[in-house]
Length: 372
Image 1 (spheres, rainbow, N blue to C red):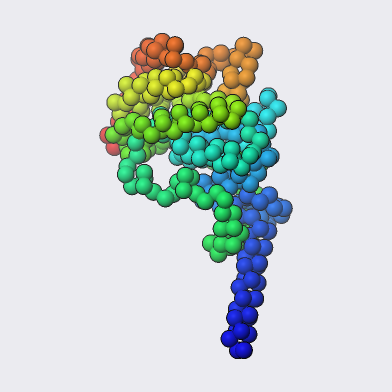
Image 2: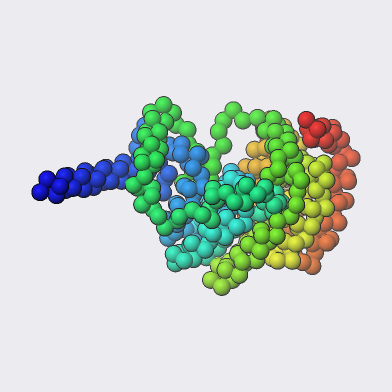
């Protein structure tokens, strides 16, 4: 009898603990996946979005699959720069920015697979691709569990009933009490750039990081798996009547010089050629009236040499939707196919030679950064 009473008390206590945990996590919603009510100095600002970006954006896209019919996928370049609200205004498609730091085609593929499996309203996918993401990473990263591919997207109870999530909820409330006015993302998933930003310093820092890090340009070797993932991506979209729009992100020419300095120029051209063999794409990189913006403290189109501002994505959207109606920056966004990619690469060589002759100070500075 005592054992039954003890077990009953233990069971009731466990149920109360689980309910309390779920209520705390649901009310605070530290990962912004349940669309819970927002209250000033309580849970309006979500600091965990930055710390747990992969988890939050993936879960949000699945839980809110009926709130959008277009999803934008890609790395932090998309995360920071692509304005889904502007895309909605121009196209009428409800759009969510699911760009996530340091992700590749395979990560986006897994998100689309889950959305298709969940019978979402997905009609369009905009996929931003990057040269660095097609580099074979170190073995320890290939085998890492910290990947979208291994995220248990169906296990939403892991958020509601997790004590780790309770800790994140507490951190969220404390953060809101201290800094209640600093947002990290807008309502459509676009990361908000904070004030006191020096684009020039950040641009050179990004150049150095990409040249000297094994994750990016250093010891670059193409990764065939990313091309295989892209082929599967194309097939899934075609099979499910989802329009796929692929684009190369518009890195500043300082990053192109970093690619040149690290002896990856031919790898870069081969990458663009291989892309064209699989699918047509919009190329916003190269040398044009946007990407050649000189580095400065306050830039019009860039946060740094890697990440672009919302206004840049507006030009990208215009180039994709109505290229013939543009009045400026008509050289920004070239539609590349297997028929014109060789011509495009030849122009890339010519444009680089001309640009480098006129920008030797920056060329020498980037060459020096590589040797730091």
